[in-house]
Image: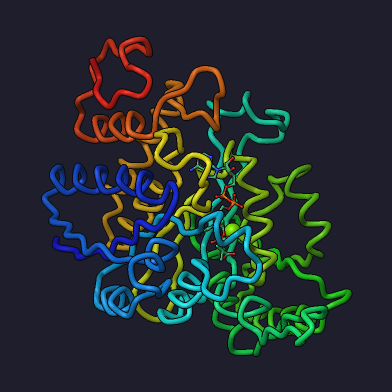
Length: 373
Ligand SMILES: NC(=O)c1ccc[n+]([C@@H]2O[C@H](COP(=O)([O-])OP(=O)(O)OC[C@H]3O[C@@H](n4cnc5c(N)ncnc54)[C@H](O)[C@@H]3O)[C@@H](O)[C@H]2O)c1
Ligand SMILES: CC(C)[C@H](C(=O)O)[C@@H](O)C(=O)O
Ligand SMILES: [Mg+2]
């Protein structure tokens, strides 16, 4: 199969983690006889530096005609620390989501038995944690009218949702909860005790629920949900929520897996689907070969599934689980014994290519070197 992928490396650690995913996609292509071609495009701070625009038209055009988009991360401290900046890297990402109508951001949260002992939570709370957050991505407070008065002393961001915006993601989430591998439970996370938009979410979900009689629906306020994710994460199966709540609770939930660097996502819309790790540009780590590439690599696995390459995706996941089980982990997972971004990428690639020596031991894999000795 031939697939053309728009690749947006972005800023900070975006390029180095995405480079590992490209390695993995190429290895999968070789093994299974697929041809992946890449069209590299700009977005974020690097795009502002090169073109003055955080999302050049060429990036949107490429994304619209490609089979999928693989995205790293955007963001730069020079904008984060300047609240008066008129042009910002994040505008590029938000505009891309809007342009591709990527209304549903799917963020799976799974745990790895091999990492449970490193978790801040008790291992018995972690075994079997497996839920998926459906985060609405093109509405809410992110996209409502923004105002600041002339004196710059009062500002507002409007949070608004329409019934169709809620319905389209709710249907996706219900259908997902009904998949054979899921536990047929959907939890709507909102703030319906305070917010009018949340009350609309509840009403729309309540109206839709009877069409999915097999799915048990639960409603939870976001403040409670933030606590429940930590104390009893096994109760969740599919979590449906609006844009900003989803942003926040998914970073929180990543702690269950072991690190923000582990979580992948897909953003689904009416056309091209985009795949990206949930983390940001982690500027402190940029260029140091210390970032965890697994969030990006698992996003590439989600992309393979999107191409109906299920066996290929399963092999990538198996390879990831193998590196974690062998202790080949990055600094965010283990601050004492850890391996570089590219070493982890190479090990996952070698596993896919069945090139891992049977007698491999940790000492034979050099920290920061990208070859197995
Ligand atoms: N989708 C995106 O591109 C995206 C997402 C979030 C934040 N951002 C941007 O990224 C910049 C930095 O934001 P931030 O510091 O709040 O969030 P961040 O996700 O970049 O990093 C937060 C912390 O998470 C950890 N982390 C994140 N990714 C990691 C990885 N791959 N490996 C190991 N550890 C990792 C690090 O401890 C880091 O300090 C900002 O400009 C922000 O706007 C972009
Ligand atoms: C960078 C920012 C606009 C973005 C968001 O808030 O959606 C990020 O945090 C994410 O989770 O992808
Ligand atoms: Mg976020």
